[in-house]
Image (cartoon, rainbow, N blue to C red; front, top):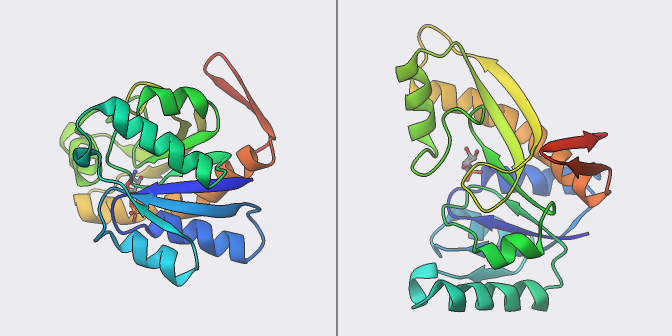
Length: 205
Ligand code: GRF
């Protein structure tokens, strides 16, 4: 399948996907990287791996409608069949969500439905977990729907919260899990091994 990756930042998850594709564990073609920020390190990772980059800042568009139309045009032009959001900080317009339903994945550095939703991303998630006093955290990989951090769950994995954890140390351990598992969800979608019944994602991952 032709897979687009959307990223806003460092793109270490994107790199982990590229590495798995190179080692032939993951069978997708990376059609394009879409970034809202041209300075994102993810753009360099794409270029050094021969993956086209499209810089698309939503703020350049007067209406969400025109942003969605441009996105749809790009996804069509690159013949994109599935999408992996990898640290993408912008909301995906509902038209695109509908078009790629159950073919668009997101990765969240916490155990949804706790510690998710608008404003809960990156360090904010880990700080919220520590402030709450939760004893576990982890990663959630889920399909994207019209609400933030809400679609059907594909994979969840857990880490213990340690007594001396800081947001940084917790982020590092969760990121290891992210890198270890995101490709599995992407592969399961690409190989059409999973189906969605209501909120339940069923099949071999
Ligand atoms: C990850 O923690 C991911 O869960 C979240 O954004 C972060 C992206 O990190 N959605 P990176 O850019 O892949 O290093």
